[in-house]
Length: 164
Ligand SMILES: C[S@@+](CC[C@H](N)C(=O)[O-])C[C@H]1O[C@@H](n2cnc3c(N)ncnc32)[C@H](O)[C@@H]1O
Image 1 (cartoon, rainbow, N blue to C red):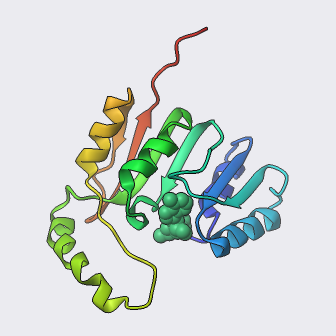
Image 2 (cartoon, rainbow, N blue to C red):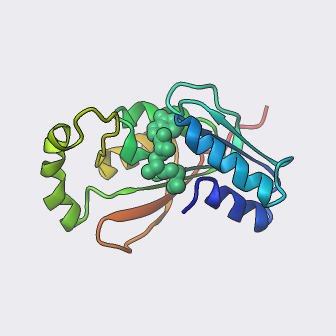
């Protein structure tokens, strides 16, 4: 999917506004261009930022679409980004619980040999650890896809804040 594609799809579907962050200025540029072409330049904004460390705006829905595969400190990224979710926290990731992913996971160790000189690294984070981390923060898992050989989509309901 083109950068910003999911955001624009959600805006077309009725989401009132969206804020996106990415470490890559190119991804931010592509997403901003798509939003503008699609008539959403006033309701969508994209910035360069680190989801693991930046102060993120509190939002009803926080989505990390194919992001947990591309950052070394998943725990920090999940902690910071989930803290911004008021209602739903959604992630898609290569799922360490799937048989094929379990077979492929050890080969990631050899990435430096193949990706010499490139910053990019692919990770298969532990889905079970992420689920436990979120449960410990009061999130409830409400959807766990079983589709695909390697990837999963998981949705979590955010803990209800006490009034006052
Ligand atoms: C595989 S791409 C997916 C891009 C987009 N989400 C999509 O589905 O088309 C992974 C993206 O995650 C971004 N990324 C990785 N770690 C990040 C972090 N800590 N904060 C913000 N963006 C991050 C990378 O810069 C990269 O653009």
